[in-house]
Length: 53
Image (tube, rainbow, N blue to C red; front, side):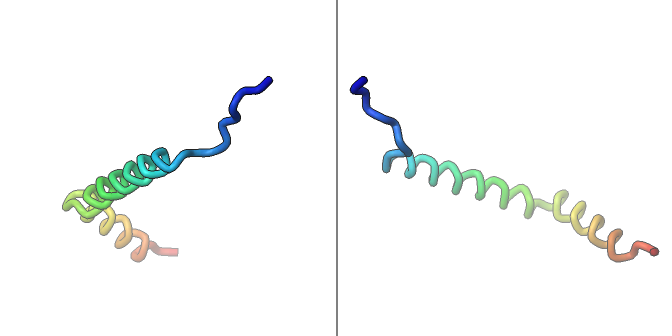
């Protein structure tokens, strides 16, 4: 059974995967740093810090 084995990614697949990961990180960074998300995170953190135990 002399087929070629598929063991891992080629260099081009690594390059495409890296570009996709960087693009996803850039979009996530923009979303997290947007005004509504920042204010929501700030209110959650302030609420957690002001919690009564």
